Amino acid sequence: MSDTLAQSRTNCLLQYLPYRNQSSEPSQPNPLMKILNRILAASLLVAGISLPALGAENVVIKFNDASESTFARWWGGAVQTYEHDAAVDADSDASSGAQKIIVNYDLAAYGGDNQFAAFRNFAATIDARDYTNLTFDVRFDPASPSRAGGDYGWLEFGLGPTDFSQIQLGALGVPVSQGGWYRISVPLDKTVAKMDSIGRFWVKIWSGGGDGFTGTTTLWVDNVTLNANQDVAPPAPPTVAIAKATPGLQLFASQAGAQYSRQNIYTVNSTGYSWVGAADPVTYSVTLANYPDASHSGFQTHIFLVPGSGIPTFENSVDYNRPNVIFLDISNGADGTAYASFRYKTNQPNGNGMIYGAGTLGGVGSPTPNGTWSLTFSGNTAITLTSPSGATTSLELPADAAALFADPLHVYVGAQPNQLGNIGQSVTVTRVQITGVATPIDDTFSAGALDTAVWRVSAGDAAGVLTVPTGYTYWLNWSLPDDGFTFEYITGDVVNGVWQSAPGLSTPLQVGSRRWSLIPSSLEPFPGEGFFYRMAKPAPAAQ
Image (cartoon, rainbow, N blue to C red; front, side):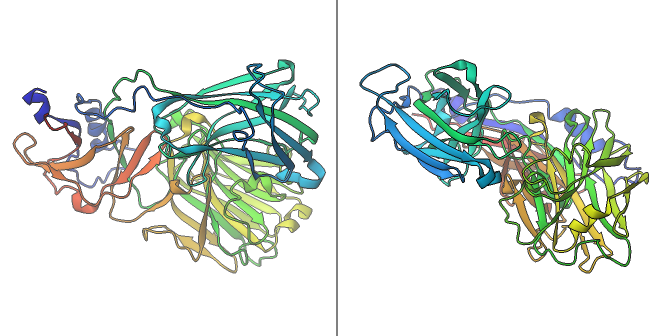
């Protein structure tokens, strides 16, 4: 190895410039951010990056005998049977077989839990970053019930980390017209969190909606394969960016591949939050900052009002699952504006047809999504929506519907990406207020931790729901993979000065294919001081 290579370091450089408080109107561009956006365009060459394992063997489960057909029930109300079937094989191999799964659906009996989820453990923990894609074969008995669209239901599948969480890799409806084995192949994204500790393969079909099944589905699974990397190019070095950090509740759309994942907090208690029967007007309001830009339109922030008590934290899709829901739906447009719709449903568990149909009563717009949105009830049925611009609209909720929302009632505040391109985006909630009720709330989330006496997290990815305490001005974020890289900083002379490790960065949060970490106030520059960050990785020691 050459002396030059041995002494080199891999750097992704980010300059953190001196700044001062601006007194201009919020609509004016931030000069600091304009400069930073220009700086962040460069990336430097890489040396000494470790590669994924080359020439690794494929992991193949062929279900040759009963010892390989060890699928098991994971969850689901439908009765499930798992067995080895030596008479059926995707490759027509008489000495092999397949995993047989029999599911007895009953929509009337199981409702929203009319589903099955099955898993099969691998022999050992697998680093899936060393593999390019997952393939498997599936076949349905043609006597299995089908949907109006001509498929056997929405088949979801993926890998399971050793902590029993899920990484969904895809979902599709196997067409009835297929008439035999159907091969599924999907790529693996090595930047997805927990891909380095995979313990199982899983499949499931949920059939609890309006087109849910009643009847027996029989399917077979064969040739579950993780295809190994054979020729892997060195990964690019991390690219680094900086983003404004505002004290408050940060809601990241952080669940990979899940465009409808809800990222919520909700009230621990359910008493004292309802407007029904209140003597004075009751207002539920949320103040937003740092909303995704117009190129990430359709990003949703919401307030859900959900009657009932003791709703579990895992039930984050309450707008779909629960029978009665009030829904303030705030969304940004492709032109930079925003709109809030008042939606509701009654007596419709495990569905949302009413919410987006007759239950949409109207809405109000705003030139920007940032600012305070409020929902006010005067009496039981009169509604006023107010946008950040001060625009209002008046609506009327039917009296029989309003009566369903008396205490006990939980209040949810959350976000949802709605588009795959919005995964990785976030919004900051700087204030939530509930006034006019027996148990008012006024929370600015500035303490650095969620007040667990008031709020619980209910989210598709709980790690993406966090608070930014006061004293933090910026986020650092960088691309993956980042194995072996660390942050360093320097002030003043970047050429002749000494780079130092950057202590005190918050624990990194993975959001999509990037990690995010807060810069502590101790590492913010003094006025007039040049300040630089870089990601660095020592080159391997000379042999």
